[in-house]
Length: 88
Image (cartoon, rainbow, N blue to C red; front, side, top):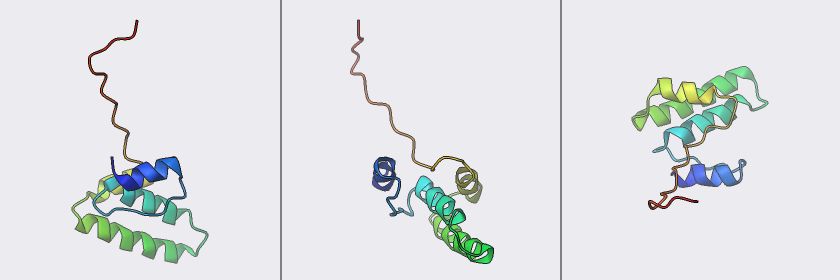
């Protein structure tokens, strides 16, 4: 899991975003959309963030989809290995 996503999961106010992580880009855009700033400023900031993440090769459609979520976009947690043991 991305370290920034892991930290944001612990403390949602964590404000670092890794351009190599799709979920970090979506989280940044998600946050910008909720700023109490003029609409045109939000649009411009979102466009700049979108450009950074698409320049890293991320899909604009995926970023938009994740940024529209109600919940804070975070990279999914990986299930922990069970080591083949079953609880009885």
